[in-house]
Image (cartoon, rainbow, N blue to C red; front, side, top):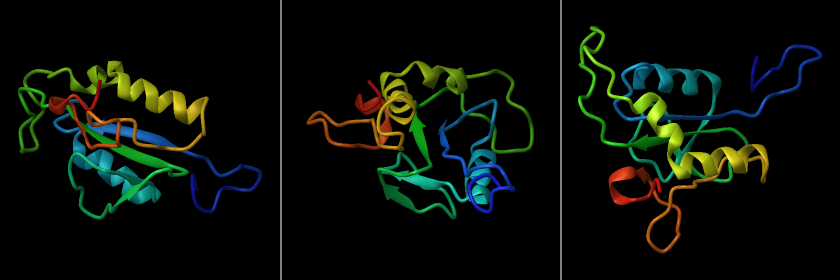
Length: 134
């Protein structure tokens, strides 16, 4: 009842979500499950693919963006909590592209757009190793 079929007297919401490949605190599959269940669009270009989420170019009314900050260590592929936090869960919030994305969503066009850029300032997947997150 958040995006589709809002409860009586409650307006439909607009949502901006993002996550980082290898998040140790909230698993990627959990974040992707929430986005699929809520019907949130997957912003393109994307740093990875997610099952059941088709990347769409912005602007989006509500959307989820994926960052790849190449954290180490990556969390285990098993159902065991990681031994250490790799810092990516909160670390991505300090990237200039994430701050631009928040600013655009709250104070700008109030839509979800790609704020990771290539060297020519074109929208790019948020692969922080390429400088797109700066």
